[in-house]
Image 1 (spheres, rainbow, N blue to C red):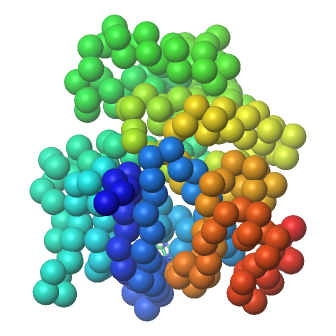
Image 2 (cartoon, rainbow, N blue to C red; image 1 turned 45 degrees about the vertical axis):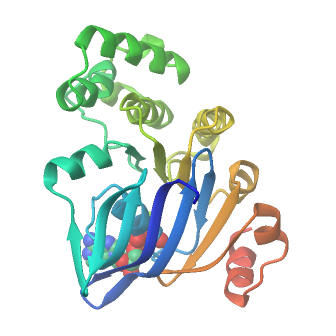
Length: 253
Ligand SMILES: Nc1ncnc2c1ncn2[C@@H]1O[C@H](COP(=O)(O)OP(=O)(O)O)[C@@H](O)[C@H]1O
Ligand SMILES: [Mg+2]
């Protein structure tokens, strides 16, 4: 049996009458870079948000690193206890479109808060690691600066450093460059590209199709909450099997 880092089985999620996830089954292996594409409202964010439990599923199962986060039996979904959920979701780290940095904390403190407060890391070691991570994203000079003084691209690079600080098993990127001016998306994409080359496991929602093709091992196309097609990037982009994917690609490329 392959040990998936993330496993979703027959996951369903509704918001009232809206079906956001419709029987989604998806496994992500260690070191894989899975890129999720699809039109607005197709369920991409919901998929990521269910993995790190910003949203609860209605039925199905989610397993992280072999441990169940939620399972369904007898038609009822059961989540783990809260303390166990917290441990599991610390194995996932989300990078949001709008950065979601804490404005009242310096960049360094944004990065160390989860390791120190939640993971009970030694503060001195957490700070040293945070400096290493800032160096990794090219922002070591910004340690003492507040997010409000940074450009969007710099904010997102701090957010990526913060995501890495908890030593997650999988990085979840939800349109990490969509809020950025086109001329600065490159600096964020470069950081993500470097992380991919280092072998980090990642799931990435993006509208940057060139980047998707370049960085993905696998591309997943969603429509109306369903996974319609998945496959290697050249197959998905050059020979879409479904009409819906063909139409989507015509509209975005
Ligand atoms: N908090 C929410 N409350 C109600 N409906 C929501 C909420 N979040 C998402 N939805 C709906 O669920 C569907 C999937 O949304 P989402 O996962 O955000 O799609 P995507 O990220 O692909 O644009 C959409 O129809 C959206 O309007
Ligand atoms: Mg979204």
